[in-house]
Image (cartoon, rainbow, N blue to C red; front, side):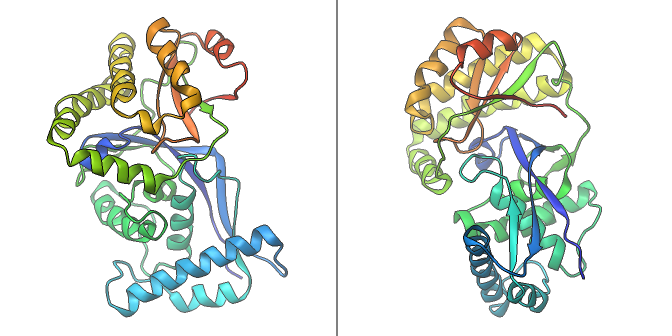
Length: 309
């Protein structure tokens, strides 16, 4: 019987929303959460719900295939047969948290059923894979960049130069233990990616906002990535503070109301710096600090998780 592989969640360190406008991005696998296709003799309520979700996903892919629009060759007969054998997705990846729950599902389905799949991708293959995954994940979000399932499938750090140029890279220099700590804050809320992305698209219809995204947000985002990759601490901290301030001014709907004061305090007291992790609205927020213990005291009622590669 076929063995299914495990796939990790992901963290988009930089590039949320701006990658839609062709900025740079930086995404890493996050092994704390993962998921795996499994079969079961009997399905409990949770497994049944997962199986029904996979059945809907199968129907979406089968429809595209029948219309000759599917960008990847899948063994849909095998997928259907496994669904009839109580296939489900066993996962501890929280949904609505910006860590790629649907991306892991897409990676798992591609790995299990793709014909002539790309097993060990080189940089030249990444745009093709990204296009495949974008179409697959569109079932879950309406529109997808394909980056979440791509990162989950690769299980490696991915540097996005632009929409067409992507690169598998080694550990970024910003992960300096005891010097700079990168952490997640659990807001204890779930977000709605599709709704928030639509808000962003609506705002981009206004020239003044789109101009600020192109002329301010994207350059700051790209500077954050370059300085973080090179491990230039002072330059990075200055850039990420600017990015945090831009989000605070222009992305208020994406910041949970209960975290507005935390966000503002971070900008003012410089103990830590917050930014969105994914589309926002809940889930995790991403933080950076040179004094993790002091940051923990600021978030006494919330769980902080250090990120390490």
